[in-house]
Length: 399
Ligand code: PMP
Figure 1 (cartoon, rainbow, N blue to C red):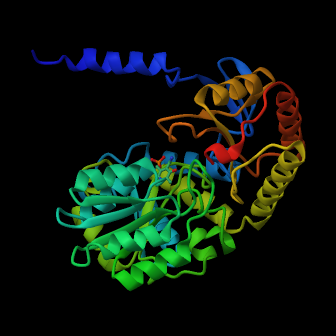
Figure 2: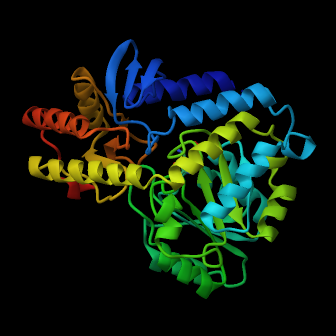
Figure 3: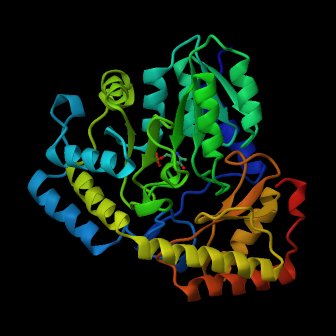
């Protein structure tokens, strides 16, 4: 007999619940960074990707409101069918200039941008070589486009080289996150660029978590690594993290952007993001560009958390980015720590399988320039108190 799809989905959900891994949608009724009101309780949040604290910035809010007054709310059509308004064009030009690329193209989300690029460039018979810890959207994009997906162990450029060398005649895309979203470490960008050049592969870097945070003027991880547009011909980044708004872009030369405009179905067949959002993002971009003081403040919080955690004997995964994972191993332990922190007034979500591999659960502590020194101090106090009751497992078991 034919399986009933909804019953099967319900059974999968039941299995996930029994494994204690059910994801829960919770209600946030107020935010004033770094505070949120979650399920009715005011908590100090270490869960946001608003790394520079721009999501609530007065100039960004003002840009959104005044552009909405002028342009209305919706773009009313896809970019190619009249939805591409002046604020979109202005933002694309500013993003290209900021990242040192010829042009940039907007997408509604980062997930769509990654699907769009892979779909536009790759076809059956090609190979897509990716870091095993790349974001789900890069992995899904490779699955959808029909190319052969090969995943190399995290950060292992030699393994990537072997995978590329094994198929010398296939057109190849080498893709990596710039900053890994659940680990916080930075990809070996210079080595990946050298490998791509040597193997005649095209390199794509997803710098969702590096843009605004790393490099001079916040131009990102690729700029910080001293790599140019020739070495990293496809640069993707999102707007919903350090820029505090929503959406994403791909930047590169005119050949790339023209091809995406024609062939990236996620761009062609989707309504353009609201023009007011583009205007707000442009305001955020200017603040991020000039935000050396914000980056300095963020770096100070990162250093404070890392040295405080080390003094408490707590193990954070190696990272100099705002993503500071506290490795706990089992999903149950990670959930226990998260719940215990919440009871003390902090929102620090547990990241569990399948977002990370089995046995690799962790707390993902996300820092922001919106955090003050006393906020991190309070978190460290709470972690220190927790450590009295719950031992942190040995990190080498899986980190
Ligand atoms: N790439 C990376 C590395 C990400 O972390 C994310 C967001 N979690 C995305 C892409 C997707 O971006 P968006 O949230 O805009 O869809």
